Image (cartoon, rainbow, N blue to C red; front, side):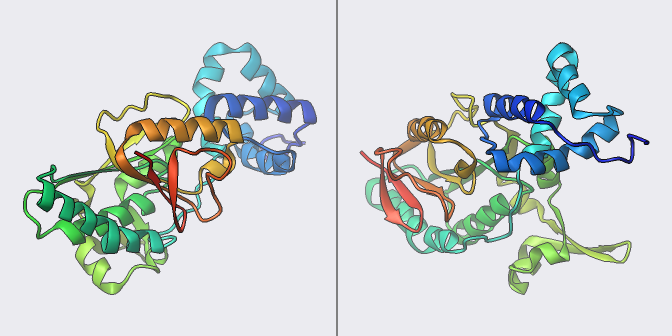
Length: 286
């Protein structure tokens, strides 16, 4: 049989090794039922490398330091899940423009606080989420002089970061986006019978993309943050890892800073450093 076209089966020992390696390097916990997913996502990688079996792949990870160092990023890229959409869980963006930004603006007016806004999108995937944040920020502050706004956007997956930096999307990816937003913030073009939209320079200028591993603290962001988006990420971590991450987020936030999680995520029973405001929005306690 030609191993270049065949599908390999991952054994229990090989899955256990990869599971432990991914947990150590990225904090992602792979439950036993994820075995088939790992097998499916890594089969193409084995074919690319010309490695005939998972046994040989794991043996090479164990024995060849140069290979394992270079391959670790490729392994993480294939294991991570990158489901995302523009304005996904839209109530969070409504919270920004209708509640949070007006509060921030009033604080600056009343107390003379700095007209500065720093947001971190800590799992940016292919860019839809940070660009949704950027659209919300730009539309609110564009006619308000003196404001200095910046969005940090990071992911552990280098492949999705490349897509995010380009900011080019097929038309079907922008289905949740209104025609007015498309016209204002995207440039439409056609290529090979497909319609694409590219993020305009004024949005790209707001977003600083970089690779960050959430296990590595202190994070490589020197600014104290007003708000952190960490949506649909901690569901892949076990509770000890979640607890450590929330502690590190608390340190990274300004006093009374905000942390926004995904719809199926919670701090209940894990962290008491934040006050729950509803809709998976949390505020750092003073």
